Image (cartoon, rainbow, N blue to C red):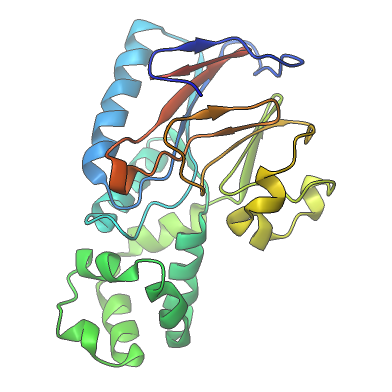
Length: 245
């Protein structure tokens, strides 16, 4: 467990980022645009106090659903990408949104994980959300900005830098990254969470909420359930050191 402003020296074979590189990794946001704004301010303040050649923001996925401001979250992150400040990973919730935008039949599985609040954030009314999946599909496509479509196309399933690997959910143990299924990268839980040995790189992930950021010998979990807890975790990684902002 690591807490805010706590500097952690790794207890294992010192996975490291390249020199003059700092990564700010941000956990699952789930519609909490207010918390995202606060985190960005903390990142900007940290960069001003500790200048470095390469500063990269990596958002770990699950930007939408559950919380009230999914549209605003995507708007903010699309702008961060446009400014070449951020890399945004695909979460399982974004994958479900992409499926629904392509096919009305995708509404039912998406609704099970919190689509209602996302649809409301794009202006669909309560009465519209009681209509058919075909009507909801047409309405969302009508109001979904082109910049947000481009944002979805920019999402990555993983990102590697130095000895660190960033994914939304995790990896299936024993399988090389290039052979991992997209489904596992976005959805896996127990097989990954229960695995105690090295994955090679140190894996930074979200997807499974924990009360505090977890630093383990083979992974770092930064999903602190922001939409419920009000705590959106950001860790700064530089060299071999991990700090919670």
